Amino acid sequence: MKGDLPSLDLAVVTYLPEGINRVERMVLPPIDGVRYVVSWQDHRDAPVPESLRLRTDVSIHRFDGRGISANRNNALERSRADVVLFADDDLTYYEHELDNLRMIFAQIPELDVATVRSDHGDAGRFPVKETRLGRRLPKGYYVTSFEIAFRRSRCGDLRCCPELGLGSEMLHGGEDEIFLQTAIRRGFDCRFFPITVCAHPHESTGTKGAFTRGNMLAFGCVIAMMYPLTAMLRIPLKAFRIWRGGQAGFGAALGSMVRGALMTHGVRKRNRDCLW
Image (cartoon, rainbow, N blue to C red; front, side, top):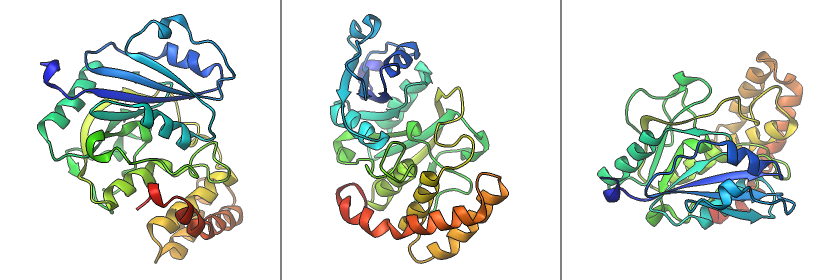
């Protein structure tokens, strides 16, 4: 029975006036116990479409902060359900799998954070069965924000690092993996489940085409944050792989990542409340 399942909020982020039209075009199935909490950044006082304004399961919150991480944090702060799932503004959700996600949290009371599949990117990156997540993730696995859900009663203070992610001042990436690593390193019960909750129709903004300097600064910062003892060995290897993949020159990648690594101490000092 759905009435026995924990409530679920999808923390949707969008930006610019046209962003709210992307949300309007999304498939947001009306489900008992599920709400859609939209944080709308750089809205420029544009009107909310009537189709969204009249829905009781959708709430729109205008936000004037900067960067996708700050936008996600605003959506989290507006969420009130038992479980919160990150969401973007261009996804299609599968109703039965959203209920399966709620069922997982109902059946495993000790579970804090669940990561799931999406129809997005390389399907081979996902483990084939339920997997407990530790500091060392399964080989080839990486997580995207809209594949992360958490139990708000125990993880309600988890936040994205506002200095990481698109739209931040310098470090354009890394917020998803650092959010998950923060949960793991704070001792939360984090597991992957092979259910597919949504489809993402195209490549993510932060991963398509050549890497920007902001992307590579973020790579260096994240590597230094996660592997402080071996970062200066890992960074040249990452730069080589970027060069070999044709996404940037080796020297540019190496120089930007080293600079990003040197920024790690300041990022940590300024963001102690949302890191481990």
